[in-house]
Image 1: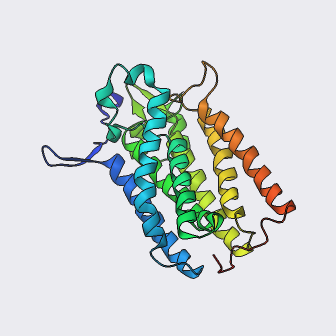
Image 2 (image 1 turned 60 degrees about the vertical axis):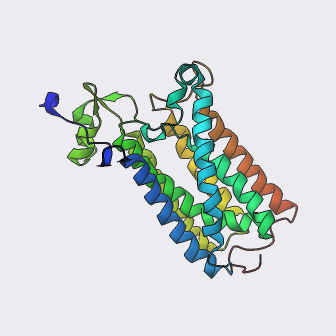
Length: 272
């Protein structure tokens, strides 16, 4: 039976010279849904309805470039010998941490130009970002990447997974941990948590910092299960190091802003 398992087609639409891959389509859908949520929330918080539309016009392409550059830098031994593959982002290879760096830097510059609090923008956008990440992981699923170590079919069936997920985790004659799914579920839970924290009316910036902490904790543990991690050394995974640093920095910023009186505004305040 296992020999007859065929992976899902990673191409959504084939028009000859033009191919639309599920990977890009799913990431795009995640971004659009996140934008819709951010636009609705930004209007409630007193911002112009086009604020986030204007932001993502810059943030998304910059984030994609940074995500790819981050990945290529840490895989330079391969890409230095195959420079033509650098642009092939439809095959995967977008590092989330690189994309976040690009998106946050763009958001900071944008906030200064528009004279809007960066923390306010970040708070509004945080649930959209983690939801987009949750959806985007299914692009990895279609490409059969971002998986963990070997497991048995019985293990996967014991997780009560649909058969299409179990079959897609059969790669080159072996079943693997669906770590893409673990992270997607973790991020969906984080999305629900952030929506709940909106009602708590945290101080400005703390919703965003909560996102950083939540995502980084999950990423640290899930990354340890993956087989395709970007490595700093033979035993040190880059994403795990960055996750630890982000948790420490986020907690430090949260406490510093509170104790120094830099976070007196609340999330539900409507001022810029």
